[in-house]
Image 1: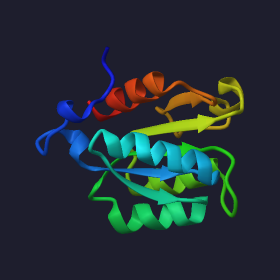
Image 2: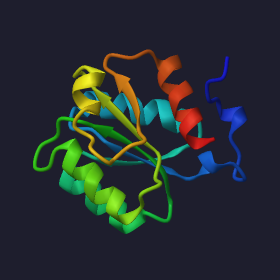
Image 3: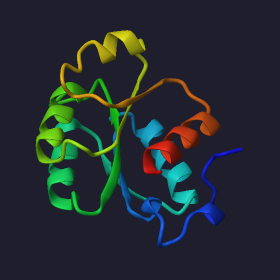
Image 4: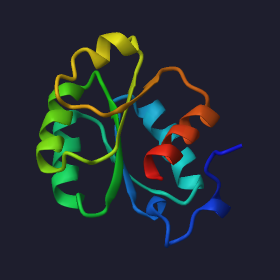
Length: 135
């Protein structure tokens, strides 16, 4: 199994940086934060696109990847991704959405590459995708 575990992370790995989680569902965000924290990752949490963009601007040197919900209040995932990619076009991004992958990916324009993970997802699949993005 290639999923992250506490023993697979140390301060010398890219995974030692922070993950920015932009997710408006407080139950989903709490669960994802706990899963990632259990692997040793630091998690910065935003509940809407504007807050997520502000956190990225403030902590961009510490953030290794972003997990982005597509449907967000105040600023949707598409606009949030566009603004963050203006700051760093190479930041790894996982879009997590209940919408169909084709529907979301067709809205990305030039904001690729991204990883898409449809909701609901298994913990193993989620951690596998996180590990790939942090590799």
